[in-house]
Structure formats: structure tokens, C-alpha cells
Length: 268
Length: 267
Image (cartoon, rainbow over all chains, first blue to last red; front, side, top):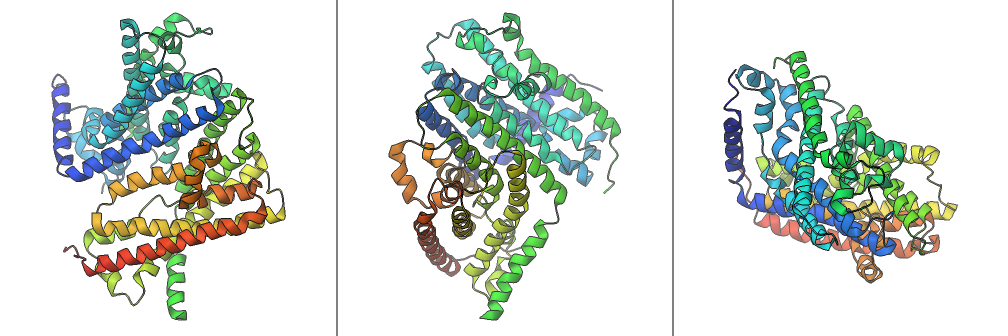
């Protein structure tokens, strides 16, 4: 199997998908605006709560806004890139996955390239706007190493969410009935990650640190990003946090391969 | 007249049976819902622990508000009717136009059934679990409970009127995707689903009082909690029903205009 042309092939998939979507220009703008607005509403709620309560367990609005910006930007990137995995259960049900198996290219790559959703631009914009506001509102200066870590954390977060999408698709090799449960870690993960994980109960924080490493784009790099007291988090953990998402995706892809081997077509 | 009423009742009944078919999906949805409630409870808990300042709602009331929200969220007008959407796209909506029924009443009953069935399906188990395990209190008095039931019926009518308006917008936009993305977040924010309405700034309260959305979530829930005394149920119902009447009138107007200039999609 030739793998060297994989990035080029993926870009071609992306190009085709985008050109298709831009055929419906008015619909695209409405969807973008709608997504921007939908995500903005939630931040308005957080802003109102800070107006009433002043602070959240020692965290300021600007600090929470940074977490909010990170998790939403990362999720929007992942949704744009890996959403093909979301429509995947339909491919299994319809037996369409067979066609992908016949092609001499990695299956995960083909599924990812199925559908690149441009309309997610709305959430991305909104994440970036809140992120930008948080960066200016925070007192600390944004030095080069901090910016590097921030970029890495967002990238690592995107890898984590893509990994979750891959896992969700992998589950559909066994069942297509109860997939909504995965929404608890994908959409539920973004909801959770909008706040510092330290405000939650310990078991909940541990789950989102060690099982689904959401903490790696949240409170683990926070001491460096926000110039806060480390609170027992070793510096190497803060610096290394972007790696958690990459590792998670690698594990997810491993499971995906097992799932593909397990696949039996519906034959329809 | 009674024949027509039977026809609308049959539409509600058919919708009910259809939705009750998907039990596994309902279970997965229920678990997701529960999880969501836990996240929200922990977030508000943390906020209440952060400040000793007096708040417009007590911590206990907010917890109750959250679980009621998890139980009742299917009641909200968050979607256009998928069947009507399909009919408009394929052109079979023409059959709807020739039925010997009032089209607005037909679509309104569809919308009503589409709220009522999933709400019952999710609300009953969620309320039972919340009462047993999650610390949701029963209403402080029988009067509060009765006021909540009455206001929930009002919310159902109000929500159906709003949902019918959303569906009617399909007659202009066909895809309806833009509307179904912009309206639901607005409804969540202004009805009390994002945060309980009393926690918004004081200057925003008169506006929230005026708008119809408070009647979907906030006022029924606060009647349940006793946060609004049961004596005020009349004002709550009046607010809901006046808005429902206004929205129905607007919907009928729009429908009359749309059917005059309707172009049925061929196919």
C-alpha cells in the first residue's frame, strides 16, 4: 500500500467537499451565523453568572474565558476535520463501508475525508473571539513560550476530540443503537471543559484527566498559561500536556483497526 | 366539527405511537440527559460556594430548576416538523393543502404531538429519579403543584404555537436550516434553559418578563418551586395565553399569505 500520497489525497477530499458545500452559499452563511450565535449564547450565560457571583472558586471570568476559548476552538477544529466519523454509523448500516475497504488507502483517512464541514466555521470564530478577548483581558504578558504552549494545547485538544469521534465510529462496528451515549464525552466534554475542571467533584475530574484527557487542555497547562500557583502540578506535566491528545488519538486509531478487522458487511 | 376534532386527535395519537417505538435511543438519550444535569449541578454548586452574597434564587431552588429543565426540555420549540420539511422539499405538501382540514390546526396539532410525546417519555422517568436520588423536592404545597401543572399546559400551547411558526418559515426558506440554528439558542437563553432567568442582570428582567419565552420554562418551574407563590398563577397563565393567541394569529396570517403565493416543488 502506498501511503506517501495520503496528505495530498486528504486535501483533494477536502477540496471536493468544500466546493460542494459552497454551491449553497446563502445556506452556508446562515449556518455559520447560526453556529456563531448558538455558541455565543452560552458565553453570555457565563458572563451573567460572573455578574452575580463575582468569581468561580478563585477563578476569574477572563481565566474561564481562556478555557472556554481553548475547548471550543479545539472542538471546532476537530469537528471540521473528523466529522466524517459522525456519519459513519450510516455507512455501516447501509453497507457502504465495503467500497472503502476495496480502495488501497487507509480507511480512517477515507472516512475523515468524507465530509469536511465548512459550516463549523461559526463555532471556530466564536472560540477564537472568546480566546482573543481572554488573552487581552488577562493580566499576564503573552511571551513566545506561552503562545507556543497555547497553540500546542489547542492542537492537542483537537487531536483528543478527533480521537473521540474515531472511537464513536469504532463502536458502530458493534452497535448502532446507543451511540448517543458518546455525546456525553464529545459535547459533554466541551461543556465540561469550558470551566476549570478543579470545580467539579474529584471522581469526575479524574475521569476527565486519566480516561478522557480533557484536563490536558484545561487545568494541567493552566499554571503556565495563567501564571498561577502550580498547586502540585509538576512543570513537565504542564509543558507535556499537548501530547496527551496525540496519544489518545493513536490509541483510538489502534482500536479502529481492530474494529475494521471485526467488520462484517450488512450485505445490502 | 366533532369529526374534525377526531381527526386532530388521531394525528396526536399516531405521532405518540411512532415516537414510543425507539426505546434504545430513548434510554441512551436519558443517560445523556442525566449526565448533562450532573455537569450543570456541579457548575452552579461551585458558583454558590464562591460567593456569600444574597442571590435572587437559593442554591436549592437552582438545583430543582436544573433537574426540572432536564426533565422538561423536550417541550421547547427547538425544531421544525421533520415531516413537513420533507413534504415541502419533495412537493407532497400539495396533499396537505387538499385535505378537508384547517391546515394551521393540522400543523399545530402535529407540533403539539411532537412536544407532548417526547416530553412525557423523558419527563416521567427523569422526575422519578430526580425525586428519589437527586434531591429534587416535591412542590412545597398542593397549590404550587397544581399551579405548575396548569402552567405546564400553558407552556405546551405556547411552545406549539412557536414551533408552528418555525415550521411555517419553511414555506419561504425550504431548507429551514438557518432558522433552526438561530431560533433554538435564542429560546434556550431567553426561556431559562441556559441559566435560570432570575440570575440574569436586574436591568434585563423587564424585557424577559415581557417576552413570551419566560412562559416556556421559567415561570412554570418557579411555580413548582414556590419561588412564584401559587396565587400568581393567573398572571402567569394570562401571559402564556395572550402570547399564544398572538402567535397563532400571526401564524394564520402568514399561512394565508403563503398559500396564495405557494409554488409546489415538482418531482
